[in-house]
Length: 464
Image 1 (cartoon, rainbow, N blue to C red):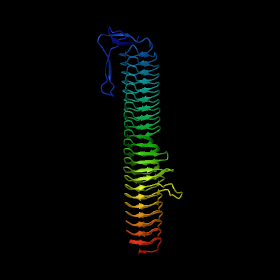
Image 2 (cartoon, rainbow, N blue to C red):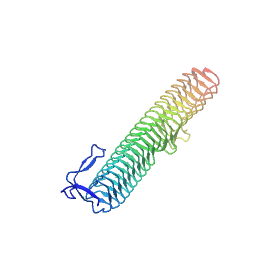
Image 3 (cartoon, helix red, strand yellow):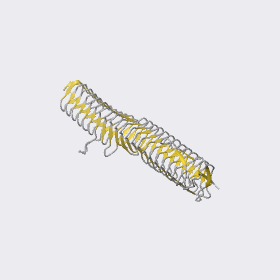
Image 4 (cartoon, rainbow, N blue to C red):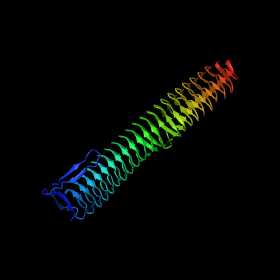
């Protein structure tokens, strides 16, 4: 008959053992008191159980007759082992734990007190499950996995080797946690999420359902992520990256960043979003670099950013904005959406190769054409329109409803309301163009020039 060991003279109800759990997260050791040992019959609840040598089983344990228990195992008080459970050598099951049917626990694994392992669970060699943790049906823990106290691992989830899961972590069903990853206390991994290898998830961070986080990524505390993220992602604390976007590799996200997008959105490799940046309803392709405090928000239609975009610190793009390839918006620049008050409002657009430098201010309804350049501290008024190759110099001011057709507005020039410039027209430095004036194609206003209200300039001039 299979045997277990207890201290002589104590009777089967007086189980004596010692325990040294060490510091939090370590496996701990159970061992029988060996002095004056005597062999006693194993519980009659499991007359057919297969039990190895040097096994210690508390008499209150309930063990199904089809269970198989390897050499040197320790089974505590009030433990339940269901049908077809298999324990490898040296497995420890703490008091009050329950192991469901068909579960396999490999050599040297350790379950602390009040652990629940469902049916068909697989626990790898040397793995540790701390007190009150729950492993639902079909969970797979590979070798040397550590699960913290009170954590819950949902059904059919797989945790790869050498991964540490902190206390009170929630991992929903069908998730996958890669090798050598670390989930800090209170982290949440929603169903079907995939976490790559060597990923660090911060305290109370949450990975949304179906999200993918690539290898070598680091997610800060209290951040929330949704979408598909490439390798080497770096996210600060309290970031919100929501909306099922696809992100490239080596993406860097600062603290407090908020991104709301959808499945159409794409963020390229090496995207860098500084602290407190905001993107709302954006569709992003190509490279993007956003400085600290930058903000992009969509209107009724999503904002669109496409390729090679650099948006400086404290810039603001708001509303129904279309930002195309080659755009750079400098520090402290503001690009505002249409007011929406009038049907003739023009959606703000920054076309291919536009560049908006430091502290420029782009007002509601502005449409900037391809390769438009807006200089530092320039200001472009409401519903102004530029076309291909327009350049607006440093500190220049362009009034409302003006149209600049591939022309050059030099530094410190002043363009009034409703002004129209033709192709290749040149407005010199410090020039002043009054409202509703027209500068025809190839005409030039010399430096310090002056054009009166409603006048037409057809050739080079200093005054009109």
